[in-house]
Image (cartoon, rainbow, N blue to C red):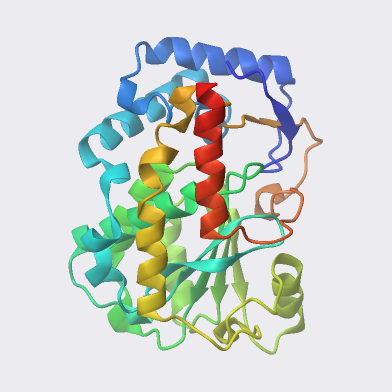
Length: 323
């Protein structure tokens, strides 16, 4: 068990359990998991178990079963072995990419542009999305465990609708990345999308569904939502921000290649004696409607760390663990 536990209202969940009760349930899940393969020792941290418990409303047996499925999936799919060069052909149009900025709650931002779809391979598209998810997780600040999605519907039409891909994507994201989504901004979706979204609703967990926000340009309420979540000086102009640079594949590819170099360190650092990944305990709060739709109440990130600083931080953690 981690001794460096910090209480937080990461997902602002309704939770009547005390910190000690949460820790007890985490221990019970760990007992049900049994021996964990060495390759998954970092993944199966207290923080991970806590997320799976929250996804199953703190039901120990359901959380353990869900986590076992994810462990099996990770051993077979090997998401930590995917590199940029494996998915570069899928990512060259900028249909999904991690932005250079974080939101005001310290969450990395994945930008999605479904109209830039350049592949008919559901397998390839999901592999690319998994790579982006793993990359965003690797770049999480120490006190954060969720991310934000900005989905741009410019140019989106009926030819981009795929129930099959949506269903498969939902299975992977909800089954193997629970409690990783903080908020999803659907920016200026066309009118036909809302009925489609209602058709998709059965594939989504209620918690996930409530984290989705429809945002429209020239709408004052939408502007307020964006300004509450983001520093608009950093946000792309396509989302009403002031960044005119946009997506450049050559620069982004180099960023991803540099990030790929950090992956082995990320998956071994905790095994070498440094601190266990932070466990986010949920602070008990009163019953509240639509609580899951609110962003995590974390301290805003002051600045997005540079890739050089990220690498140096990981190396220092390993060196400290070896002392």
